[in-house]
Image 1 (cartoon, protein in one colour):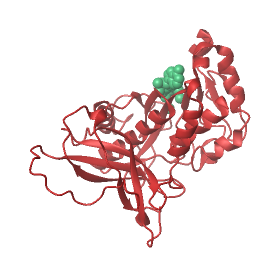
Image 2 (spheres, protein in one colour):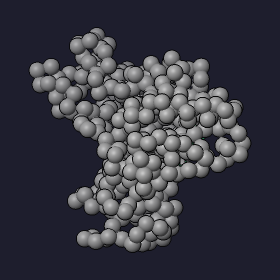
Image 3 (tube, protein in one colour):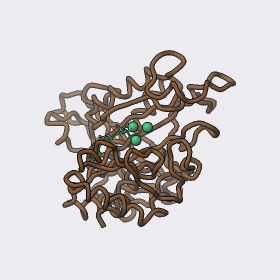
Image 4 (cartoon, protein in one colour):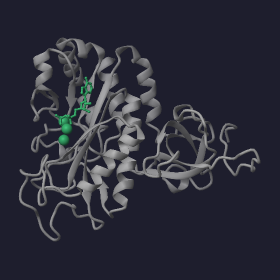
Length: 355
Ligand code: ADP
Ligand code: MN
Ligand code: MN
Ligand code: MN
């Protein structure tokens, strides 16, 4: 065990007069093919200084219950990487996003994709890459049927639902309102929300921010979404293609820009060209079941045919029209699935565009 891991009860401190707070430690588990979020609560002493300066200890958990260790050697370390106010509990309570380390060596656990993203971000720091990720998701009933579909049947075909208003066109508004306010109250860089093309499908966006910030905030925002929806018995699914047939899948369009792209159109085009040089490596790491979603229909390009174009929602990578007009800005990689790992997606874009 590492010496720095402090677990177990603290002896009572008679000088302590403040009420302790709750810290919700969140981590990504080892479930395959798509990891799940886990969390547990630690009661810690209150802190009088600024929230951002608050000292947060490492902690541990039983990796044999999360597909991250065997029973004989079960301890894994939770290393805090980002913390913010807890908008669910309120008060001075906090949420702590963690990465997982091996207790035996202190090295990143095989399920820890953040460590590699951190290395890439450090390597290409001078190019000042920013990301904005559009997280789509689908609300399901506990029995797995889409929350936006009538019980035992199907709704009218896609058309009126995207950015819709009114009963019969949108469902679950209360959940997204609560989730959005929770993200704002936590201080996450949420930049917008909208109802999506399939009923019961919604989107929120995080960014622009660097690879680690956008990804840390995305995971906390996903956790908050599951947590808010839990109170309504609504399941949040990040499945890439939750409903087969003539229904849009769920993606995580990843908008990105280097400083050079924000200054010149040539750099935007060069980045789109570069993304075409490692197509399979990206698609294979953009989330489980990507072939079901990237079919060439439903506003997607086929997974194995790379393309880019201005305003083209049928391309792998879209250059927004205002970027073509202003001759600078960003590009949108439309391929990542809703169930992607943002640490991996942002790392791959960094390595391919900046490398
Ligand atoms: P869409 O038109 O594809 O639905 P959205 O408005 O949902 O686009 O999302 C666009 C995302 O791009 C937002 O998260 C926004 O913050 C982000 N974004 C805007 N400018 C940049 C930039 N220069 N670099 C990276 N991301 C950006
Ligand atoms: Mn969008
Ligand atoms: Mn969308
Ligand atoms: Mn988009």
